[in-house]
Length: 101
Image (cartoon, rainbow, N blue to C red; front, side, top):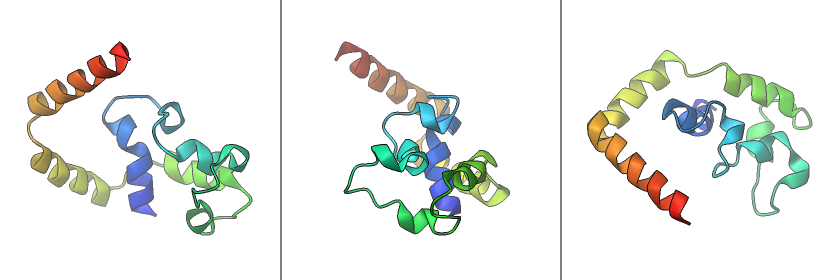
């Protein structure tokens, strides 16, 4: 469950967006709204840890943020990805490419 939280908060931690539901490339919004969920995306397994019909509990879990273990994981992952300058340069290139199309 913490890894799921990490995944959905990743664009927020990267300062791409303020909340996970603003990031269009992730499945977070489908966990909150089953009516728009593609048939191939299985959200029930994760939601079954809460009340499968109540996405609000899932949203609350995600909004609790990242715990100390995940913060440590972020630090390890960041050291594998490269320096802040390296990440920033690649993020800027990606943003530039997306804005062209």
